[in-house]
Image (cartoon, rainbow, N blue to C red; front, side, top):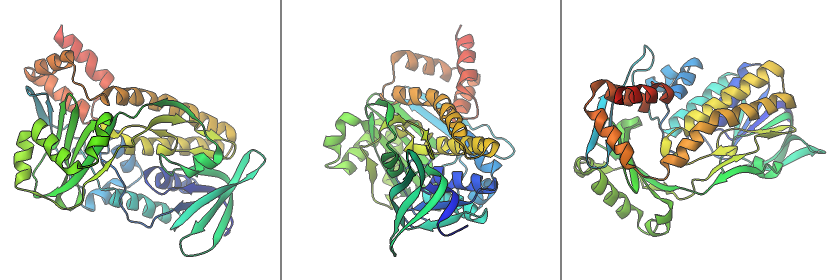
Length: 394
């Protein structure tokens, strides 16, 4: 690769960017990958990778390295709703995927970056994009500044913005937001040592909780609050966090009393919900750069991996042309639409009475409970789950 020219520049080396770079390099493209931070490093995230995302990692040859690197397998799921519903069961296993997985981002992202480098990607950490190169209305490259050197530039047939919700590539390219909804929740989480858990979810009106084991023998405990409470909570988030656990999950709070947090409390009140225009002449957006939503449903990592796979499919089949980018854009909007609507629903942090009634009925039916656990774990498509329950309810 020339020092100032390549086929594709990918800006952002987290899940969306590193996986895009990996797949395009494996397809034979010359790829430069830039990120403003050094790796490995963490980022704000609730970690869960759904079953479809894990299947992609397996397809790319990265499942075994992830598990061998200490990512725990959670084989049991427990779901609480209100004060009266508890559904629990074993997660359906396949030969390759034995449960639910919540890897730390400093591990997962670094694994993807190293795989990309092994595939031939030129990775340059510590580089901040400060502008785009253009020929008329077509983007033809990027200008970037290294943390340790002068400003440089690289020309490319395609610039991929994978630089997150506040994407610089989107801003420089003038990518408009085409669909947007108000922020729904704020979220806080920390990591706890010596805290035995399954994959645990707690739903109640006004707040949701989750607990999941991750790397280094730690358990992440996360609490969601209505966005309207953010201004109050941010002044003393640890008190609000612990109070929410005691109120919604007293048994979990009892277990936590014998544990200890080992990292600072992390949180955000800026979980935006939008679709940006996905592509234009010489540029395309993947991951949160193009489509961001509340983390309440835990599909962000999987969606990033899926978008990378779709983009690579289109570019591998047709080359680096605008028609391929338009097809990616259409597929992204179609494939992300249902999940976006579900997020807007879950983000209200409500447990309607009708839903509670159905969940109470599921507690009395072993088959329905097993199907519910499978659906929440991502081992059963919701479309296959709901009609079955309706038939059983009749």
